Image (cartoon, rainbow, N blue to C red; front, top):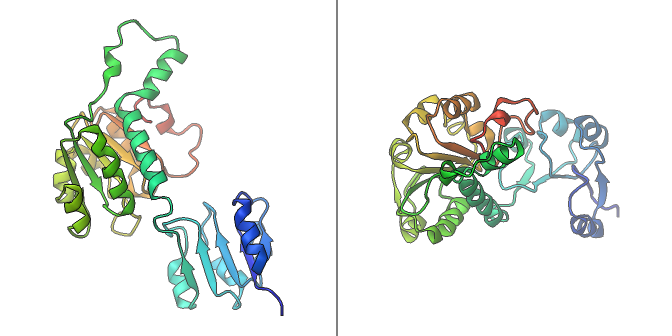
Length: 280
């Protein structure tokens, strides 16, 4: 009996995953992670192990053919996959919720500290020989006694709040579809997006990308933030109107931003965001 064929979309997947799959499956390995290579190798597979920044779309699903019954993505989110097309064909889709909660929450805290304490600006000052003995400008914004707003209190949002409790935050706010019992347990207050935007000293976006959240952080959003507020995004780049963010940072509408995600990824080396000193 032949073993099921599984296409693995990324050659940098940990070897332990290849070893495990190899016990039960015939592995079709992608070497260069291009759409062209994927389309040339995907025909006749039973499953796809998707670990790529590329979009798994109708063209790839068509090329795979009717044998394909399963798609598994190495990420928690699946906005990079044509879910509607997969549903129509009765293909099973698996993701990895909670696996990266702690790692992403760590990055959120890292970006919050780096942006609020002007880490990138300080490094630029040294690199450009602009450092002076009088460094009061480096003090930045305090987390102690602040109000932190989290947009999306899922597993990652909750992990962020747990970590920031050690920084003596005065108040945690959160927003989302509904009030959560976990929010009460963490001592976080459920509020509207408008209230969170206006009252928070730090705003951390940790929600999934959906039609509802796409472009949510726009010019109106940034205009409501405090001028001393720090904006952090560990969600998806498309949740933010990036041009509006650049404008807000340039014009001093907000203090700084810490970004784990952008649009596109990777950014062009000449992108306006990379020229700003108050982006971490």
